[in-house]
Amino acid sequence: QVQLVESGGGLVQAGGSLRLSCAASGRTFSSNAMGWFRQAPGKEREFAAAINWSGRSTVYADSVKGRFTISRDNAKNTVYLQMNSLKPEDTAVYYCAARVGGTSWSAYSYDYWGQGTQVTVSS
Image 1 (spheres, rainbow, N blue to C red):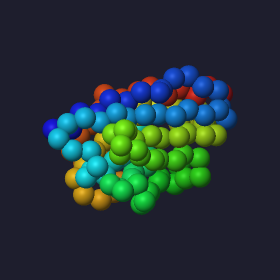
Image 2: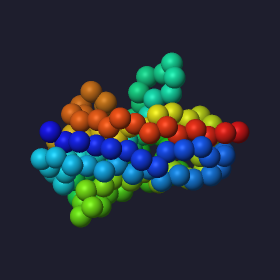
Image 3: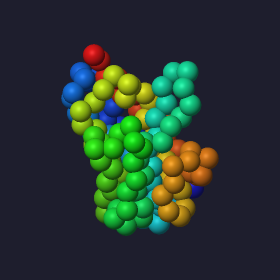
Image 4: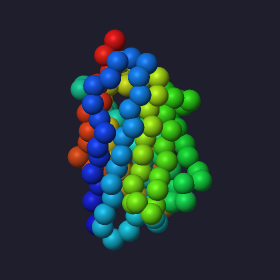
């Protein structure tokens, strides 16, 4: 299987920035599409961004488009989520996920998940 470990979460004021990292290990990384999801208390887990195996194709939720950037460094087995212009509604636990195949917005289509990292944006 694939193991995923997120890092980089924390507390930031509205308008600030954070960069999340997801370190991958296991049987494969470069063949996987990667995604970032987030979940706030009392809400369903929602899609934020995804990237294909080469890093040349990305997709974003409308709620983060223009503010977040997903990228990957296959040499380091790491995927990133650069978050700019953060808003209080971005507050959530952020999860890294991996799947075989192309990008997908659906959490049900992902095979492997990290433990999550907390992001809190104050007003």
